[in-house]
Amino acid sequence: MLTRPDVAVVGAGPVGLAIAWRCASRGLRVVVHDPAPGSGASHVAAGMLSPVAEAYFGEHELTGLLAESAARWPGFAAELAQAAGVEFGHRTEGTLVVGLTSDDLAEARRLWSYQQGLGLPITPLRPSQLRDREPALAPRVRGGAVAPGDHQVDPRRLVVALRSAAERAGATLPPGPVARLADVDARVTVVAAGCGAAALTGLPVRPVKGQVLRLRAPDRAAPDFRHVIRGYADGESVYLVPRADGEVVVGATVEERADTEVTAGAVLRLLRAAVDLVPDLAEYDLVEASAGLRPGTPDNAPILGPLPGHPGVLVATGHHRHGIVLTPVTADLITELVVTGEADPLLAPFTPDRFGPPDATHPGSARVGPAGPESSTEEERTWN
Ligand code: GLY
Image (cartoon, rainbow, N blue to C red; front, top):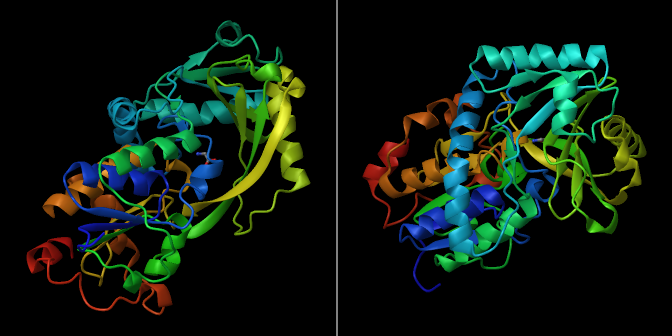
């Protein structure tokens, strides 16, 4: 690109690519920096669009943002399908929450009672109703509930679709990494680098390891079940995400670790829980065992907005367990901020300054001067 870009996005996961697509569609010159697009957390993610079954105690603000983004997903998916011309496995059969033993059911019920208390759409089912919906469930599953609005998408295909849409809209992906913010030359820089945002910005983003399995139905037939299944099985929490092409994603561990080794113990626990809930899975091929790093934050909520002390730099990271479901709302809000300089009120609980000033000693966050001659001081005031 010969002229200075309007927007440089650092990070080509779903969030970064969606921002690039939206900004390019608004007529901005956009570059996306990532030496390996789609190789971060999204590469192992299951793709649950789960604003209800993943609404946890004490996370009110986050729960509201999940619901807002999930509501945007159908329109986002329709637009993306048209813009990209490729399919990305968006499925809307809903999610079943199930408990294997009476203890497991008590744990699941405690959470769904909380979710119902928030007015979220989740409805208890008798065991016979569960099995009418999914005959593949083990007969000894004690009970559960349905969250009809909790859907799914295939994150690997989503990345392909978003990249295609972004490039068709005019965004470019030059090769090469970005080690420091000072390496980026654009009117606005958006840091959407997942765990890598910590080194670039000094913000408190920490890796949270997740180990995930991929099974495949014999002969690549569609799996024996259609709903996402969120299960509790002898004290293990597990989710099963069936794809039309025969894949079933089984996830995931949640570990305060920064390595990506796959351990025998985790594979054993995930498989045992999966087969306890859906016995036929024992006949499936185990085709992949992988681990990824979720970008976690001190309050488990994303970090969205201007980076304190860095005019012209915005942050969109820290999506932790919710990067895929939060992609549409993140892209919309950050794009609006880039284009108009106005912060949507939805951003208020998630701004980077809620954690105090970033760690200024972090080498990657050093930036030489503000965004440059094309950036107006008015914009910089609005953002800071
Ligand atoms: N969203 C599910 C997970 O992070 O494991």
